[in-house]
Image 1 (cartoon, one colour):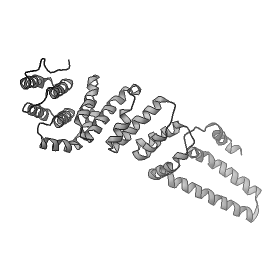
Image 2 (tube, helix red, strand yellow):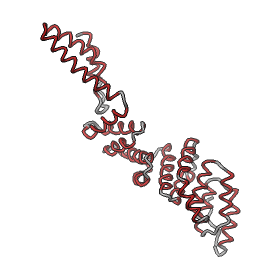
Image 3 (spheres, helix red, strand yellow):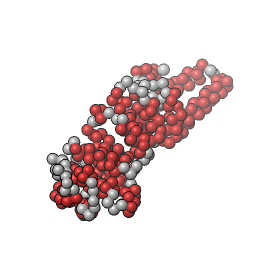
Image 4 (cartoon, helix red, strand yellow):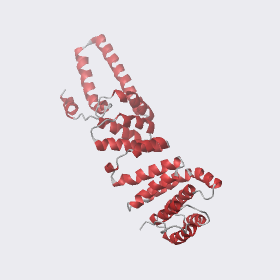
Length: 302
């Protein structure tokens, strides 16, 4: 048995709570233990009866090993297995959160949602992280109402700076999925109000998603060429894609339509926050020409 001393020690001292699949860690130590047990039984149970017993035991062990290989050799089967037993898991919320994160990263969003919902931790940061990740899962499933439900209740005080851009991007796109450009524009401008610049990865992903959502706003423009929500959508899209010619065309079209003073304020603030100052003077002049009764000029962010 001295051959098994090292692995036996491993079994006793290395047993982290990794969730319902702890026994995976024990497969390697079990090999020398099983061999030692087999040799011991062969000596204790001599004769034909002993050999028959050992063959039966070996067959049972092989069936168990085959089940393990079948489950673990395919990620989809493994996830289905985890999903069936997840609610009976008696381990800590740390394990549930870790499992949900692993499912999330591998694209099993519906399974991840189920696990995130099982997390009930006293750790407020972890609970908020679960809430944000739930919104992210629903974003990947393109379910805007659920995105808005989870992320609108997210406590911004728990956001690290790396999450701020994702938060605003996801909520902006969720409102665009509902064809609500006013709310989408508000979240689009939020990082700029904080002086944050979008990196290329965020810019590209955001633009790709918006391009897929353009049909709703194109229909709005066909019904009403002056529709401010549609105009703001395409201003945001071409800003992300850095298509200056198309951006200039939208700004030029704005000058041909009548807008209320509040709508001009929205357009002017957008241009100012996005650094489109070259268009501000003409827009301001047109706004004042349409509203000469205004006691002061439309507000422009400093």
